Image (cartoon, rainbow, N blue to C red):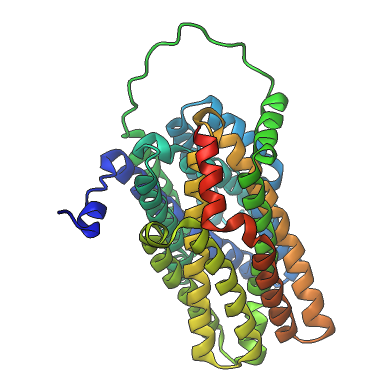
Length: 418
């Protein structure tokens, strides 16, 4: 009689997914490289905090401005082609930026523009990649959970673990190197995606008239808020983002003033988060199968709340590093569960729009959390912002428990499938 282990081993994702995985990892490393190198390039020419904030804001604005439109594009076009064009666009931006650096013509305007354009590429690539997973591995729950876990682990390793230290190290050798290497990473990612063959699809006998982009955006938003499970998941993720963003926004201050760590020590805290994210991404499928997606989400949300709370109460470096690992692991496991549920519930032709609408809702929590964390740290103390964020997230878990438990999620998934 086959064991559970042998059943898990039978999950075969195929060469198409493995190429997507490779492209995602390479692309994420490139994103992490320029996330570290761009601020260093800014600080090389100016010490203004506002200049640095302009570059960071420019990279985040595309998610607010274009995520809904990107969802429509992803649903209209071949998702592989969207990823290829996103990589080619980022490759071109970085080649131009590298030339400007070499010729000593780079300035703040060019850096802000580069950050904005690279952010646009990331929006389209990420939404297309997440929407394409069911195309490559089917909608079988085990396959989706395993694939999502590996993709999230690749993103975490590339953007947080490998990319930033590699980008900063190459910048220290020669400031042009990280941008040139980054351009090559996006070229490699584009080639991997381009090599993925498309499935043969039956010819359509009739093509319905194409709607306007605005009506398609509205259709995606209505689908998100019309489905109780997806609506709740988006709301909970948004509220969770408030607490987590408050945590990460104040992390440098906590590391310096409370833990008394040097800059290198602050980087190690981020590395601890990435290590936890890798473990969480790879273990999420097995945890979801054994305990159920609702349990993973509830334990994940409450566990992150407890970890943030402990960061505010215990001023110990090793405890802090452990709590950052716990945060990374649980957040990533939650993300895998949410992605898998969404991919199982949403029709193929709407997945990009529903995903982008959900991402926009979640993104709203980011600036709110950063602002609240800053206010609490300024008025009281940095630890107060952590205690408040942790308690808030635990309360959110308790309030939403009735609609996040295994029975509620299973019922909602069965209704959608029916």
